[in-house]
Length: 222
Image 1: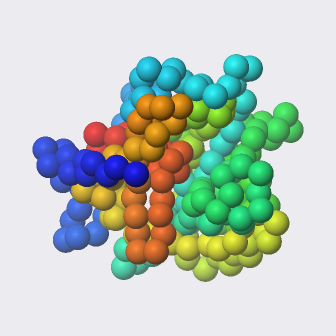
Image 2: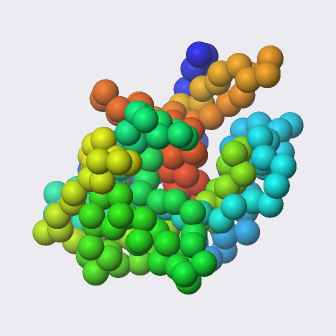
């Protein structure tokens, strides 16, 4: 693996006293989300020669993920999950709660809430929708709509043992700091393929999850 740090020194200041303000973050997201929904996001942005769906030849599959921002008084955090090692796809990787949009869901928001309830036991009533982001296109053929939600403290979570090995929180300020967005690569079919990674302690956030976090950053502050 080859690492290329993306320090993005010229990008905008995100932090106030070392912490991201939830109110400021939310207000900026609401100002920017509508105008930036049409932009391209996905694995192909760092790998333009592959095209949007590099390993998929069928019709793209609609999916949604929830980006749950916990409104702690000291500092907001983002809930992430560690997938169980026996899953058929993305086993053992870090992910947002989410999955395919069912016909009965009614849209990305409803699908994201349903999946979050099934995977981590999050009560849908505990989540306040903030905004949808531009769909993130994956090489495996998914068109993923990320939905940002504010979560007030006082909720309880229970991981689904069939899908989730662990639930943890990462400071929003860490994820919204471009100094922590590393560009890395692995060889795939004889060529280097690039992706974002955001190592946080023992947690290695990378791939689609890191790409969605980068898209959130670019939507709010880019």
